[in-house]
Amino acid sequence: MYQENIVLCGASSYEEKYYFNEDFSALPASVQDELKILCVLFVSEIGGVLTLEFEEDGTLCFQVSSKEDDFFFDEIGSGLKIKEIQKEREELLTSLELFYKVFFLDEEIDYEE
Figure 1 (tube, rainbow, N blue to C red):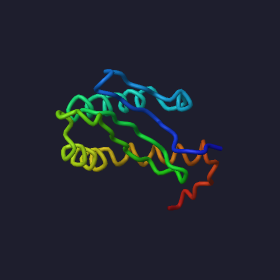
Figure 2 (cartoon, rainbow, N blue to C red; figure 1 turned 60 degrees about the horizontal axis):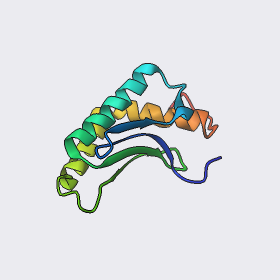
Figure 3 (cartoon, rainbow, N blue to C red; figure 1 turned 120 degrees about the vertical axis):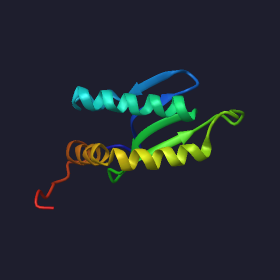
Figure 4 (cartoon, rainbow, N blue to C red; figure 1 turned 90 degrees about the vertical axis):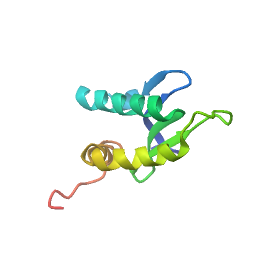
């Protein structure tokens, strides 16, 4: 279906903008709002650009980048913040992966797992 990673959403501290992929508009508004808050708070605290992307197998990944001359970008804090988000928002992130696998990859889900 898709050739590369699919961006779910992202935010940039440089442009002060948030992006949400309209292919995922079926997600509940509360989930969309939570993603927006997560991304915007991340870049306001850490700097740079954050995108949440689905890999081919449906795994949700955090991609962080920064401009080469951005001396305010917190690279160490970036890794720590991602680990914190993955721990605190594990249920949300797992649900997003399940949503992607079912609706985009047409995978069958075994409810007994």
